[in-house]
Length: 255
Image (cartoon, rainbow, N blue to C red; front, top):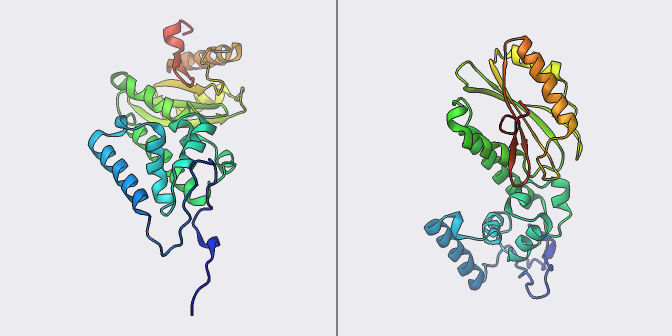
């Protein structure tokens, strides 16, 4: 029996985002047009030969989308995502609810984007966990930036270190709004005792992008520092992560 054409069987809907870059609708049984196959192969070859540095954000994002949408031109969707979220990192770290608002983003795309984000975070975390923080400071900053720089709400994390300044735990203590996160100094110090930590590094992000500390940031840090001192725990630093850079309380003279 001949099956009627059924465009609802696509894994993702067509993406008529740009008038000059219409997607090509294909049924499941059709092969990818040769020009799309060649385009994808050129990107893969360039990536393998030159790495990510040889590719602009939109092409790298296209490659991520290949697996999620195997039978359509993904260039329009890649450009739409970048226009909405700014850059490659912004797309990967965007909240799921906001990603869904972009036409053409379905479950397959969401899974692929969040999988790449999770892999990046895990790789960055592996470079600092159970290692001396002082000798891997740049890797620590990279990890904090990758995990927090593009978040749209504030997050407060504590890095717990042992006597040799080896990172033994990284825990989220609180989440907040776009400009505030509730932090309880007693709970921070209590958790350090539970983990038998000898030192701490506090980390939180500013969704505004500006890492300049607020009065409440300074006061909270002072309260945690007092609690640490009373119990013989060292507060090494408090890092505020912005979109482009990080601010160190220790370097700026707040500690």
